[in-house]
Length: 234
Image: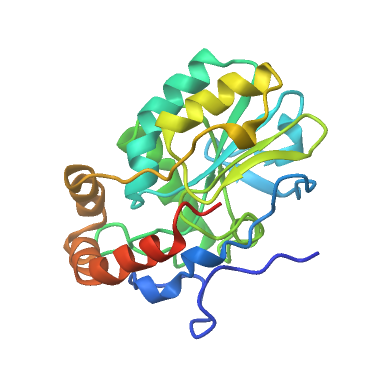
């Protein structure tokens, strides 16, 4: 079954130049779900190598969405990298997607080459050591995996999705990782989306530029309402 994007139907462009909360329907997540088989993509890693997601199925895969201007990805990046160092029996991947809050410094991606060069900055900006795969300019992989800024999946070695959430949260995710190795029922474990603080949001958004910060503040009431309406996003 083909999965649809979570972008609002009244906005057909994937590469939005400026953020609006109306572009997302958080309560209607339509990425691949638990029990489904993963969908493979060949993508370029930030070291220039072409890689398929399936190349990493020698171990279970932790696949997280992210971009330079996503405060939720930014807030999770350091502890997730530490988790990757600790749990070497998993392959930790980042799918680099569209800019969550494009601005005048870190703009939306005009071309694939520009997107690739922006993605390469995550090693310095967020000290990212996980394998980073850069999605296509039109977000082909991103749309299949839900089209939200910081979704997270665990794919077992057979290619079956055993865990997915519309938003990551390291505080809860570390318990999920521990439970996978013990074959515990992951549905019984508590999980809530991360809520980046004002300082983290400011640091991330200023990387995008003053336009990123302005758009975020202007859209914040609608953004908070959409998150509230969505609840814990399954």
